[in-house]
Length: 443
Image (tube, rainbow, N blue to C red; front, side, top):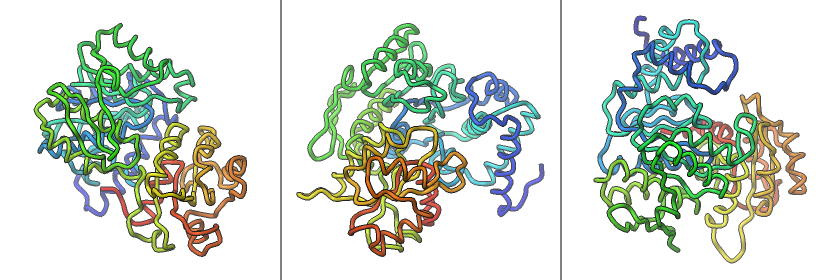
């Protein structure tokens, strides 16, 4: 297909994604056969990748990948990343040797995949995974950090014969309509990314999840090591961590990513990265921990169109389940410590795929006000009115708002109760909408 002008590249990529997505109307259909068939038509690019660290889990996957990437890049390594979902632009899912894929390169890849696929049924995630593997196989790098989309055993990313290592972050109930609500069963799905004779680094887990991971590792001969059980580490009062790596104890500073849970994520990231890249020095680990960036997660919104609407600081967070909400609730007092607890103005949005009250209950005690919005362009979003009814069961006075802008204006003009910081939360899709509306896209 002849090259087109640069201004048309984004439209080309979007059109290709729309055409491919229409081949399989079901958004999620777990399984590996379609991915393997498509990759075979593309020449099996997944057999020509740099060393891969494959990451599964319920919460913290993106943070652990962001920390590993920052550490590896601080050591001068070239790092590919595949992550999902994106916040504002699809390009965020594919990072090539440190840089987000361009519109033109993405459009070319998708059109190549489309030609190879023909009219065979394929899901959106299968297409994009194949396109990512094709891109990663063609650009030299030292490391690929690969995030599963959903589950593990049947996730499209799980076609690799031998990753350099696998990582499993904390496991909790999520996507119950696909994975069920039994933690042991969910852990069994996540454990499917393990491989024989391959190291697997896992976060501390519930007893049920730990037992399931250990059982699967033993059954296939994977080398499982669990943080706090097989790898010692500790958190310091100043926010830093100390961790026993293979070459001895290492002291690392407080993670740039906010929240006490990021200390555990940093320890897991350091353990996993040094397992694969043992020559990475302590300075690179420390520099990476101190400068890692992961947009949309306990992020203070940069100055932009939305922050100009009021004087208070505005934060965003993409936590969307009870486990993530608990981490958010624990982190909030640390953002503004003092003798008198700070009360927050919450602007919440949520999908209809899980009980919203489970999330809202975690943050209600720290609320000065709660306004609820419908997430724009998300058919699965709860309406502002429905979410406000759920919120009112845990915080009297919760109310719907017409939009994020309207909610911020209400806080700015004082009609949403006294001054206090703002937290926009409940969904990564909402966080992405806010970043785009503010004019501060992730890069």
